[in-house]
Amino acid sequence: MLVPGYGGASLADLPGSLLAALGLPEPNLLDLDAADRVCLFLVDGLGAELLDAHPERAPFLAAHRTSRTLSAGFPATTATSLCTLGTGLTPGEHGMVGMMLAVPGTGSMLNCLRWTFPGDEPIDPEVWQPAPTVYQRAAAAGIEPVYVAPAELAGTGLSRATFRGVRHVAAGSVDERVARVHDVLRERRRSHVTVYYGDLDAAGHMHGWGGDEWLRQLEIVDAMASRLAEGMPPGSALYVTADHGMVNATEKIDAESVPELAEGVAMLGGEARARHVYTRPGAAGQVLDAWRETLGDKAWVVSREEAVESGWFGPRVREPWLARIGDVVAVPRTDLAITAPSRHPVEAQFVGYHGSLTAAEQHVPLLEVRP
Image (tube, rainbow, N blue to C red; front, side, top):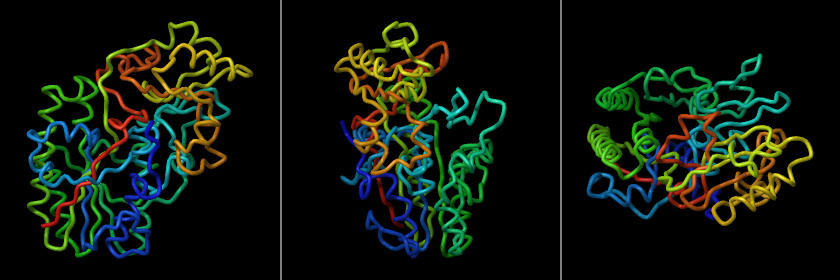
């Protein structure tokens, strides 16, 4: 088990360090050098172990790869990590503790990635995640933060929860994203730009990491990083990191069709590698025992209290967020995926998954390139 290294070696420590490099009075826990302009290239799904396995397909990134590695946080998934990067807080502080989470008092779950909720009232992103963002802090200090990403990501619930305070610059193709980043960096002396690329993660989910399509996407990422670095003005720093890694599932178990896993369960949240199991009243102990016995040494199965006390979500979980965590939390330690085909049919067909506490999912690179 790789419990995230909150407090000096995690994604939660990167946002404040970037602001400190720009001269703001923030904790520089990663000891980043000063810069006039910073660009964070966020590659969805680029785990450190995945990158290190194929240096020949990513020569630019490999040439700048050092031993510096961060842990993503738990769970190792996009919605959680984006909120961590957007706030500089641990999951237990910002409350985005999974992808599919129970909304207390409703009997329903919020999909934090797509921001869909079957209840009568929509979920307000600023209520669900009320903490100020690092972008708002940058703007208050006179640095306009910019997010370069496809237009469809602007104004979504997830963006409102995690990217409040940014100027969203729409850019679809790689060429457009590189050009827009360079435009922004040349606009003013102090700049904070984040540019996002998500197709590597999508290729991993559908085809598996390490396969031909994934490797093709890795080559695109490498070329994009090289082009971003080439056009940056003096005094800039490019940082490349990811939100999580990935494993290819070699075994799947349908939690809906196995009686021992279905009995006493009210809702099955989280995702296949980080399951939040919400139980019926009075059934938490029974469900915990059944999941432990059924999954055996293939997964870490703990109670909500054990997950919190073990520091999975950070040193502290705010009281209002506790009910979002499953009564039981099941986290595969092998290459197992715990699926729910009737509720999440697309996810059940994936090849690559992430979310767990293994090194392949938790470790993400932190590369630095200066012109």
